[in-house]
Amino acid sequence: MSAGNDRDARPDAMRLPIGTFPTPIEPAAALSTPGFELWVKRDDKTNAVYGGNKVRKLERVLADAKARGATRIVTVGAAGSHHVLATTIFGTRVGLAVEAVLVPQPGSAHVRDVLRASLARGVRAFPVTSRAMIPWAVAARVATGAMFVPVGGSSVPGAMGYFDAAREVATQVRAGQAPEPDVCVVALGSGGTAAGLAAGFEAEGMKTRVVGVCVSQPPALVILAARRLTRACARRAGVHAEGDALRTRLAVDVRFLGDGYGLATAEGDAATRDAARAGLTLDATYTAKAFAAALWHVRAQRSRRVLYLHTLSSAPMAPLLEGARAFESLDPAVRALAADATDAANQ
Image 1: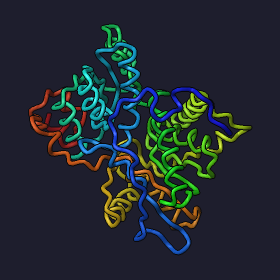
Image 2: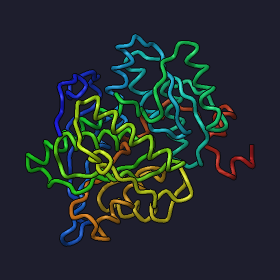
Image 3: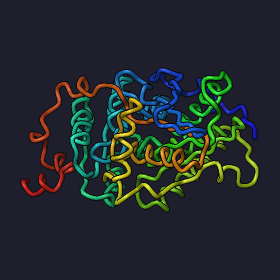
Image 4: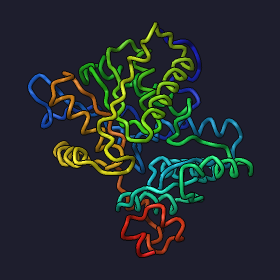
């Protein structure tokens, strides 16, 4: 296992300075058990305006867009996409117009606030009624000159942001700030976070395996995309892995998906209550399911040292909602993206 000299493997290569790093690693003593420890990597604190895992990705994604001479980008997400919100906030800051093809998502107060904040921060939304329509809508925007940014920012440049994060964890472990994790548990949606971590831990020669907790559908395609992206990140960084090393570095857990993307689960609800004891706020779509899996590793005594990567921004939403329209006053096509059964019946 070794890292080459590819410029994209360097932490300072092809990046815009968006985040505040390193993010801390903290023990969750109240949720640990004798001999089995839970630790939390606080990537909710990557930026004081809007944090979470998208910041690391966007440092490279937006740098790539600027280097290519883009003035307008188009991406994809569900109604309450954290990626769309983060891309809008930080993309507009560096002079990029941001467009998003948005698909429906089960409605909740959190989903609606994220949607309203994205609109308030300047995203130009293109609602579609199904995932099957995404390629056509994206192609139409690209035909007008927009540069495409994949869902979740999970291109190779975006995923390399979490190659950086794995190296950051390795540095913190070697400095004695935390023990070397047996597993690093993270939500697996578009795959970029898990893929970058897996390639990065391999490059660092750590024993840590990544457990990606599947939150998207269909799981088979999610797993395939994540594994392909892991290999692509390794190639980009010049990481030479023997045999099935990269494949075994990333495990995918589908047990916590429940009825599908954006739908709450009983395990996630229980994990949300437990997380509050550790000072963490979760969302039903991503982090509740991932945290439920992290707790399972501790309580089932499957892994002695568990690192949970917290990917949901903990920055206050109120400033981002300044100037936002009330949900009821949004364009009906946009409002329908995050409507629950009651809302749909009233439209």
